[in-house]
Image 1 (tube, rainbow, N blue to C red):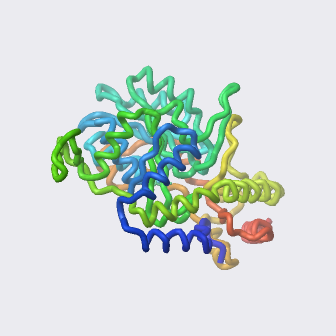
Image 2: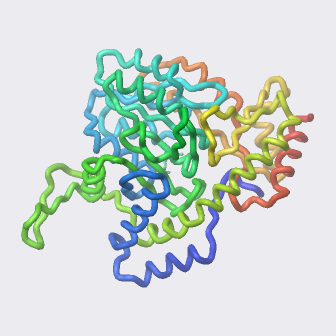
Image 3: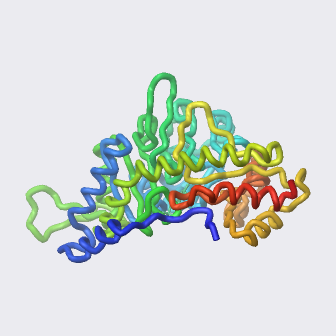
Amino acid sequence: MLPYGRQTIEDDDIAAVAEALKADFLTTGPTVEAFEVAFAETVGARHAVACSNGTAALHLAMMALDVKPGEAVIAPSITFLATANCARYVGADVVFADVDPDTGLMTPETLAQAIERVGARRLRAVLPVHLRGDACDLPGLEALARDAGAVLVEDAPHALGSTMRFGNAAEIVGDVRHSAMATFSFHPVKTIATGEGGMITTNDPAISARLKVLRSHGMVRPEGCEPWWYEMPEPGFNYRLPDILCALGLSQLKKLPRFAARRRALGAAYAEALAPLAPLVRIAAQPAWSDPVLHLMVALIDFEAAGRSRRDVVEGLKARGVGTQVHYIPVHRQPYYRKLYGELELPGAEAWYARCLSLPLYPGMEDGDVATVAAALKDVLGL
Ligand SMILES: *Cc1c(COP(=O)(O)O)cnc(C)c1O
Protein backbone atom coordinates (compact mmCIF):
# COMPACT_ATOMS: atom_id res chain seq x y z
CA MET A 1 0.00 0.00 0.00
CA LEU A 2 1.31 3.45 -0.94
CA PRO A 3 0.11 5.93 1.72
CA TYR A 4 -0.50 9.54 0.66
CA GLY A 5 2.41 10.66 2.84
CA ARG A 6 5.01 9.05 5.05
CA GLN A 7 8.08 9.93 7.09
CA THR A 8 11.61 8.83 6.14
CA ILE A 9 13.49 7.74 9.27
CA GLU A 10 16.99 6.33 8.74
CA ASP A 11 19.61 4.69 10.96
CA ASP A 12 21.43 7.96 11.69
CA ASP A 13 18.14 9.54 12.82
CA ILE A 14 17.70 6.67 15.27
CA ALA A 15 21.31 7.05 16.44
CA ALA A 16 20.76 10.78 17.03
CA VAL A 17 17.74 10.04 19.23
CA ALA A 18 19.65 7.33 21.12
CA GLU A 19 22.44 9.85 21.85
CA ALA A 20 19.91 12.37 23.17
CA LEU A 21 18.42 9.67 25.41
CA LYS A 22 21.84 9.05 26.97
CA ALA A 23 22.55 12.75 27.53
CA ASP A 24 21.78 14.80 30.66
CA PHE A 25 18.66 16.56 29.49
CA LEU A 26 15.67 14.78 28.09
CA THR A 27 13.65 17.92 27.71
CA THR A 28 15.18 21.41 27.73
CA GLY A 29 18.80 20.77 26.76
CA PRO A 30 21.33 22.11 24.27
CA THR A 31 19.80 20.36 21.26
CA VAL A 32 16.71 22.58 21.41
CA GLU A 33 18.75 25.67 20.63
CA ALA A 34 20.92 23.80 18.12
CA PHE A 35 17.78 22.77 16.21
CA GLU A 36 16.38 26.31 16.39
CA VAL A 37 19.61 27.88 15.11
CA ALA A 38 19.92 25.37 12.27
CA PHE A 39 16.26 25.80 11.31
CA ALA A 40 16.50 29.61 11.28
CA GLU A 41 19.55 29.37 9.05
CA THR A 42 17.84 26.91 6.69
CA VAL A 43 14.88 29.20 6.01
CA GLY A 44 16.79 32.49 6.25
CA ALA A 45 15.05 33.85 9.35
CA ARG A 46 16.75 35.62 12.27
CA HIS A 47 15.00 33.60 14.98
CA ALA A 48 13.33 30.22 15.28
CA VAL A 49 11.46 28.96 18.34
CA ALA A 50 10.72 25.24 18.68
CA CYS A 51 7.45 24.08 20.22
CA SER A 52 5.43 20.95 20.72
CA ASN A 53 3.54 20.90 17.40
CA GLY A 54 2.27 23.05 14.56
CA THR A 55 -0.97 23.81 16.38
CA ALA A 56 0.93 25.04 19.45
CA ALA A 57 3.02 27.17 17.07
CA LEU A 58 -0.15 28.86 15.80
CA HIS A 59 -1.52 29.34 19.32
CA LEU A 60 1.79 30.85 20.49
CA ALA A 61 1.79 33.17 17.46
CA MET A 62 -1.66 34.48 18.40
CA MET A 63 -0.55 35.01 22.00
CA ALA A 64 2.71 36.69 20.97
CA LEU A 65 0.67 39.20 18.95
CA ASP A 66 -1.62 39.66 21.95
CA VAL A 67 -4.72 38.94 19.88
CA LYS A 68 -7.71 39.52 22.15
CA PRO A 69 -11.28 38.28 22.48
CA GLY A 70 -13.61 39.92 19.98
CA GLU A 71 -10.82 40.83 17.58
CA ALA A 72 -10.70 39.25 14.12
CA VAL A 73 -8.27 36.87 12.41
CA ILE A 74 -8.60 35.87 8.75
CA ALA A 75 -7.87 32.27 7.73
CA PRO A 76 -8.58 30.48 4.45
CA SER A 77 -11.34 27.88 4.50
CA ILE A 78 -9.17 25.32 2.68
CA THR A 79 -6.70 24.38 5.39
CA PHE A 80 -6.33 22.10 8.38
CA LEU A 81 -8.60 22.89 11.34
CA ALA A 82 -5.74 24.30 13.43
CA THR A 83 -5.27 27.41 11.24
CA ALA A 84 -8.72 28.63 12.22
CA ASN A 85 -8.85 27.15 15.72
CA CYS A 86 -5.82 29.11 16.95
CA ALA A 87 -7.87 32.32 16.73
CA ARG A 88 -10.58 30.73 18.90
CA TYR A 89 -8.00 29.69 21.52
CA VAL A 90 -7.47 33.40 22.26
CA GLY A 91 -11.15 34.27 21.93
CA ALA A 92 -10.83 35.99 18.56
CA ASP A 93 -13.29 35.58 15.69
CA VAL A 94 -12.32 33.68 12.56
CA VAL A 95 -13.27 35.38 9.31
CA PHE A 96 -12.94 32.76 6.57
CA ALA A 97 -11.36 33.78 3.29
CA ASP A 98 -12.21 32.02 0.05
CA VAL A 99 -9.47 30.48 -2.12
CA ASP A 100 -8.60 30.34 -5.78
CA PRO A 101 -10.36 27.19 -7.07
CA ASP A 102 -7.32 26.02 -9.06
CA THR A 103 -4.46 26.70 -6.60
CA GLY A 104 -6.41 26.38 -3.35
CA LEU A 105 -4.62 29.50 -2.09
CA MET A 106 -5.90 32.67 -0.45
CA THR A 107 -5.32 35.50 -2.95
CA PRO A 108 -5.37 39.30 -2.66
CA GLU A 109 -8.88 39.18 -4.19
CA THR A 110 -10.23 36.66 -1.69
CA LEU A 111 -8.47 38.46 1.17
CA ALA A 112 -10.04 41.78 0.12
CA GLN A 113 -13.49 40.13 0.23
CA ALA A 114 -12.78 38.69 3.67
CA ILE A 115 -11.59 42.06 4.98
CA GLU A 116 -14.97 43.51 3.99
CA ARG A 117 -16.65 40.89 6.16
CA VAL A 118 -14.58 41.85 9.23
CA GLY A 119 -16.96 44.75 9.80
CA ALA A 120 -16.47 46.79 12.95
CA ARG A 121 -14.12 44.28 14.60
CA ARG A 122 -10.42 45.00 14.85
CA LEU A 123 -8.48 42.83 12.38
CA ARG A 124 -5.21 41.66 13.93
CA ALA A 125 -3.79 38.88 11.78
CA VAL A 126 -4.14 37.23 8.39
CA LEU A 127 -3.03 33.59 8.15
CA PRO A 128 -2.07 32.60 4.61
CA VAL A 129 -1.57 28.84 4.16
CA HIS A 130 0.98 27.76 1.58
CA LEU A 131 -1.25 24.88 0.54
CA ARG A 132 0.54 21.84 -0.97
CA GLY A 133 3.85 23.78 -0.83
CA ASP A 134 3.10 26.66 -3.19
CA ALA A 135 3.70 30.05 -1.61
CA CYS A 136 0.83 32.52 -1.53
CA ASP A 137 1.21 35.97 -3.12
CA LEU A 138 2.86 37.32 0.02
CA PRO A 139 3.59 40.88 -1.19
CA GLY A 140 -0.02 41.24 -2.35
CA LEU A 141 -1.46 39.85 0.88
CA GLU A 142 0.94 41.89 3.01
CA ALA A 143 -0.10 45.17 1.38
CA LEU A 144 -3.79 44.50 2.04
CA ALA A 145 -3.20 43.32 5.60
CA ARG A 146 -1.07 46.37 6.38
CA ASP A 147 -3.74 48.74 5.02
CA ALA A 148 -6.23 46.99 7.32
CA GLY A 149 -3.90 47.38 10.32
CA ALA A 150 -3.02 43.67 10.54
CA VAL A 151 0.05 41.48 10.07
CA LEU A 152 0.56 38.20 8.24
CA VAL A 153 1.27 34.98 10.12
CA GLU A 154 2.18 32.35 7.53
CA ASP A 155 0.93 28.85 8.31
CA ALA A 156 3.74 27.10 6.47
CA PRO A 157 3.80 23.37 7.40
CA HIS A 158 3.36 22.40 3.73
CA ALA A 159 6.16 24.54 2.41
CA LEU A 160 9.43 23.75 4.19
CA GLY A 161 12.12 24.20 1.52
CA SER A 162 9.81 25.96 -0.96
CA THR A 163 11.18 29.00 -2.72
CA MET A 164 9.55 31.79 -4.68
CA ARG A 165 10.43 34.84 -6.71
CA PHE A 166 8.47 38.08 -6.44
CA GLY A 167 9.95 40.52 -8.96
CA ASN A 168 13.70 40.01 -8.78
CA ALA A 169 13.90 38.86 -5.18
CA ALA A 170 14.46 35.15 -4.53
CA GLU A 171 12.84 34.19 -1.23
CA ILE A 172 12.43 31.08 0.92
CA VAL A 173 9.26 30.21 2.81
CA GLY A 174 9.94 30.98 6.47
CA ASP A 175 12.30 33.91 5.86
CA VAL A 176 9.38 36.06 7.04
CA ARG A 177 10.12 39.08 4.86
CA HIS A 178 6.41 39.86 4.52
CA SER A 179 5.07 38.50 7.78
CA ALA A 180 5.42 38.75 11.55
CA MET A 181 5.90 35.00 11.89
CA ALA A 182 5.77 31.71 10.00
CA THR A 183 4.76 28.41 11.63
CA PHE A 184 5.86 24.87 10.77
CA SER A 185 4.93 21.32 11.80
CA PHE A 186 7.01 18.15 12.00
CA HIS A 187 4.08 15.73 11.99
CA PRO A 188 5.14 12.47 10.25
CA VAL A 189 3.55 13.36 6.92
CA LYS A 190 5.28 16.75 6.73
CA THR A 191 8.60 17.35 4.96
CA ILE A 192 10.73 16.56 8.03
CA ALA A 193 9.39 14.59 10.98
CA THR A 194 9.84 14.57 14.75
CA GLY A 195 6.57 12.75 15.52
CA GLU A 196 5.01 15.77 17.16
CA GLY A 197 6.89 19.02 16.70
CA GLY A 198 6.60 22.60 15.56
CA MET A 199 8.62 25.74 14.88
CA ILE A 200 7.94 29.47 14.60
CA THR A 201 10.26 31.77 12.69
CA THR A 202 10.43 35.54 13.09
CA ASN A 203 12.84 38.38 12.40
CA ASP A 204 11.67 40.30 15.47
CA PRO A 205 13.81 39.66 18.59
CA ALA A 206 11.01 40.83 20.92
CA ILE A 207 8.52 38.36 19.41
CA SER A 208 11.11 35.58 19.60
CA ALA A 209 11.74 36.30 23.29
CA ARG A 210 8.02 36.43 24.03
CA LEU A 211 7.38 33.12 22.25
CA LYS A 212 10.05 31.46 24.38
CA VAL A 213 8.45 32.74 27.60
CA LEU A 214 4.94 31.74 26.51
CA ARG A 215 5.96 28.20 25.52
CA SER A 216 7.21 27.56 29.06
CA HIS A 217 4.37 28.65 31.40
CA GLY A 218 5.00 32.40 30.99
CA MET A 219 7.90 32.15 33.45
CA VAL A 220 10.60 34.82 33.41
CA ARG A 221 13.80 35.19 35.44
CA PRO A 222 14.52 38.89 35.93
CA GLU A 223 18.16 39.85 35.59
CA GLY A 224 20.13 39.61 38.82
CA CYS A 225 17.40 37.66 40.65
CA GLU A 226 18.12 34.86 43.15
CA PRO A 227 18.95 31.52 41.51
CA TRP A 228 15.60 29.95 42.48
CA TRP A 229 13.45 32.94 41.56
CA TYR A 230 10.96 33.14 38.73
CA GLU A 231 8.00 35.36 37.97
CA MET A 232 4.90 34.94 35.84
CA PRO A 233 3.64 38.24 34.38
CA GLU A 234 1.01 36.31 32.39
CA PRO A 235 0.21 32.60 32.12
CA GLY A 236 1.71 30.61 29.27
CA PHE A 237 1.62 26.92 28.43
CA ASN A 238 3.90 23.92 28.44
CA TYR A 239 4.48 23.85 24.70
CA ARG A 240 8.15 22.81 24.80
CA LEU A 241 9.74 20.46 22.28
CA PRO A 242 12.00 18.01 24.13
CA ASP A 243 15.71 17.57 23.45
CA ILE A 244 15.04 14.02 22.23
CA LEU A 245 12.77 15.25 19.44
CA CYS A 246 15.03 18.21 18.66
CA ALA A 247 17.84 15.69 18.09
CA LEU A 248 15.60 13.92 15.59
CA GLY A 249 14.66 17.26 14.03
CA LEU A 250 18.30 18.31 13.68
CA SER A 251 19.15 15.00 12.04
CA GLN A 252 16.14 15.27 9.69
CA LEU A 253 16.89 18.89 8.81
CA LYS A 254 20.30 17.83 7.42
CA LYS A 255 18.40 15.68 4.94
CA LEU A 256 16.09 18.45 3.77
CA PRO A 257 18.07 19.06 0.53
CA ARG A 258 17.80 15.36 -0.37
CA PHE A 259 14.13 15.11 0.65
CA ALA A 260 13.35 18.30 -1.29
CA ALA A 261 15.13 17.09 -4.43
CA ARG A 262 13.25 13.81 -4.25
CA ARG A 263 9.89 15.57 -3.81
CA ARG A 264 10.67 17.85 -6.76
CA ALA A 265 11.63 14.87 -8.94
CA LEU A 266 8.47 12.98 -8.00
CA GLY A 267 6.42 16.12 -8.71
CA ALA A 268 7.92 16.32 -12.21
CA ALA A 269 7.24 12.61 -12.76
CA TYR A 270 3.60 13.11 -11.75
CA ALA A 271 3.24 16.05 -14.16
CA GLU A 272 4.32 13.78 -16.99
CA ALA A 273 2.40 10.68 -15.88
CA LEU A 274 -0.91 12.53 -15.30
CA ALA A 275 -0.76 14.71 -18.45
CA PRO A 276 -2.57 12.08 -20.59
CA LEU A 277 -5.48 12.08 -18.11
CA ALA A 278 -6.31 15.74 -18.83
CA PRO A 279 -8.78 17.38 -18.86
CA LEU A 280 -10.57 15.08 -16.40
CA VAL A 281 -7.53 15.05 -14.12
CA ARG A 282 -5.27 18.05 -13.62
CA ILE A 283 -2.61 18.72 -11.04
CA ALA A 284 -3.48 21.78 -8.94
CA ALA A 285 -2.21 24.96 -10.60
CA GLN A 286 1.17 26.40 -9.62
CA PRO A 287 1.39 30.20 -9.27
CA ALA A 288 3.94 31.88 -11.56
CA TRP A 289 6.21 32.98 -8.68
CA SER A 290 6.31 29.60 -6.95
CA ASP A 291 9.06 26.96 -7.05
CA PRO A 292 7.64 24.57 -4.49
CA VAL A 293 8.90 21.58 -2.57
CA LEU A 294 5.51 19.93 -2.68
CA HIS A 295 4.14 18.42 0.52
CA LEU A 296 0.99 17.20 -1.25
CA MET A 297 0.34 16.00 -4.79
CA VAL A 298 -3.21 17.26 -5.25
CA ALA A 299 -5.02 16.07 -8.36
CA LEU A 300 -8.14 18.05 -9.27
CA ILE A 301 -10.55 15.53 -10.73
CA ASP A 302 -13.81 16.28 -12.53
CA PHE A 303 -15.67 13.39 -10.89
CA GLU A 304 -18.96 14.33 -12.50
CA ALA A 305 -17.58 14.30 -16.04
CA ALA A 306 -15.81 11.02 -15.27
CA GLY A 307 -19.08 9.51 -14.07
CA ARG A 308 -17.43 8.30 -10.85
CA SER A 309 -18.02 9.51 -7.31
CA ARG A 310 -14.98 10.48 -5.27
CA ARG A 311 -15.84 7.67 -2.91
CA ASP A 312 -15.67 5.16 -5.78
CA VAL A 313 -12.34 6.56 -6.90
CA VAL A 314 -10.90 6.51 -3.36
CA GLU A 315 -12.06 2.94 -2.83
CA GLY A 316 -10.94 1.82 -6.29
CA LEU A 317 -7.49 3.27 -5.70
CA LYS A 318 -7.30 1.67 -2.28
CA ALA A 319 -8.14 -1.70 -3.81
CA ARG A 320 -5.18 -1.13 -6.17
CA GLY A 321 -2.81 -0.32 -3.29
CA VAL A 322 -2.95 3.47 -3.61
CA GLY A 323 -3.78 5.53 -0.52
CA THR A 324 -5.30 8.99 -0.92
CA GLN A 325 -6.62 11.78 1.27
CA VAL A 326 -8.73 14.91 0.83
CA HIS A 327 -7.05 18.23 1.69
CA TYR A 328 -9.27 19.71 2.90
CA ILE A 329 -12.94 19.74 3.86
CA PRO A 330 -13.67 23.51 3.96
CA VAL A 331 -13.24 24.52 7.60
CA HIS A 332 -16.16 26.96 7.47
CA ARG A 333 -18.41 23.92 6.98
CA GLN A 334 -17.46 22.33 10.30
CA PRO A 335 -20.43 22.07 12.67
CA TYR A 336 -18.70 24.25 15.27
CA TYR A 337 -18.09 27.12 12.83
CA ARG A 338 -21.53 26.79 11.22
CA LYS A 339 -23.11 27.13 14.62
CA LEU A 340 -20.93 30.10 15.46
CA TYR A 341 -21.07 32.04 12.20
CA GLY A 342 -23.98 30.58 10.20
CA GLU A 343 -23.80 29.44 6.58
CA LEU A 344 -21.12 31.04 4.44
CA GLU A 345 -20.80 30.94 0.70
CA LEU A 346 -17.23 30.47 -0.44
CA PRO A 347 -17.47 29.19 -4.02
CA GLY A 348 -13.71 28.85 -4.59
CA ALA A 349 -13.35 26.62 -1.54
CA GLU A 350 -16.35 24.52 -2.62
CA ALA A 351 -14.97 24.12 -6.16
CA TRP A 352 -11.58 23.08 -4.78
CA TYR A 353 -13.13 20.63 -2.32
CA ALA A 354 -15.38 19.08 -4.99
CA ARG A 355 -12.37 18.07 -7.10
CA CYS A 356 -9.33 17.60 -4.85
CA LEU A 357 -7.66 14.27 -4.13
CA SER A 358 -4.14 13.95 -2.72
CA LEU A 359 -2.07 11.17 -4.27
CA PRO A 360 0.97 9.51 -2.64
CA LEU A 361 4.01 11.79 -2.36
CA TYR A 362 6.96 11.19 -0.05
CA PRO A 363 10.71 10.78 -0.49
CA GLY A 364 10.67 7.01 0.10
CA MET A 365 8.55 6.34 -3.01
CA GLU A 366 10.27 4.18 -5.60
CA ASP A 367 10.81 5.41 -9.14
CA GLY A 368 8.06 3.18 -10.57
CA ASP A 369 5.46 4.18 -7.98
CA VAL A 370 4.29 7.31 -9.81
CA ALA A 371 3.50 5.28 -12.92
CA THR A 372 1.67 2.75 -10.74
CA VAL A 373 -0.49 5.52 -9.24
CA ALA A 374 -1.21 7.07 -12.65
CA ALA A 375 -2.17 3.69 -14.14
CA ALA A 376 -4.44 2.92 -11.18
CA LEU A 377 -6.15 6.30 -11.53
CA LYS A 378 -6.63 5.81 -15.26
CA ASP A 379 -8.10 2.38 -14.63
CA VAL A 380 -10.44 3.53 -11.87
CA LEU A 381 -11.70 6.47 -13.95
CA GLY A 382 -12.27 4.14 -16.92
CA LEU A 383 -10.02 6.19 -19.22
C1 LIG B 1 -0.06 19.95 9.93
C2 LIG B 1 -0.68 21.28 9.87
C3 LIG B 1 -0.98 22.01 11.04
C4 LIG B 1 -0.90 21.44 12.42
O1 LIG B 1 0.30 20.88 12.74
P1 LIG B 1 0.38 19.79 13.94
O2 LIG B 1 1.86 19.64 14.13
O3 LIG B 1 -0.26 18.56 13.43
O4 LIG B 1 -0.29 20.37 15.12
C5 LIG B 1 -1.49 23.28 10.89
N1 LIG B 1 -1.70 23.82 9.68
C6 LIG B 1 -1.43 23.15 8.55
C7 LIG B 1 -1.66 23.82 7.24
C8 LIG B 1 -0.93 21.85 8.61
O5 LIG B 1 -0.69 21.18 7.47
